[in-house]
Image 1 (cartoon, rainbow, N blue to C red):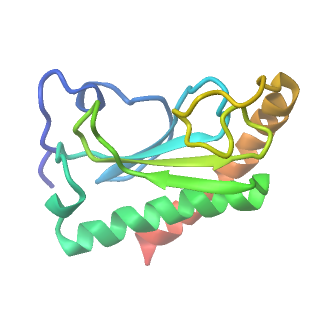
Image 2: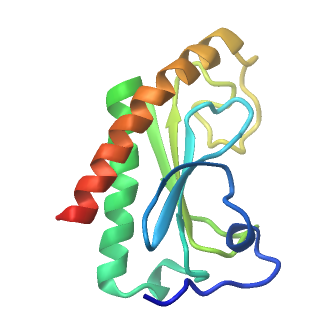
Length: 150
């Protein structure tokens, strides 16, 4: 197996990008520290590619299965109001998917995570979500392992 292609100076090539939850040969899943969003995860492709279409069809399928595993783990453990899934890459042009559980009480809901604040943050509710993350992550890891072995 060849080492993933890396680019000097790319933060997702040089660092994990957050707390590592799961690692496979071609991607990793991390929990990102984003204030106000306790269930903010990223699926980071290990090779430095900028665009989704840079991947071969088989790799796109593998990556999307990982995104789905993270989403389902969060949905089942947290019952969020909505899931936000996006790949942007404007700031860091290294392919990664944002998988974010959103709640109708979060400070920016119903807008995107970068929208203007709609209400005060609710630290108690954020902490309650954080307490549920270990169970959500266990489920994600189980689902991710199943996608790798199928």
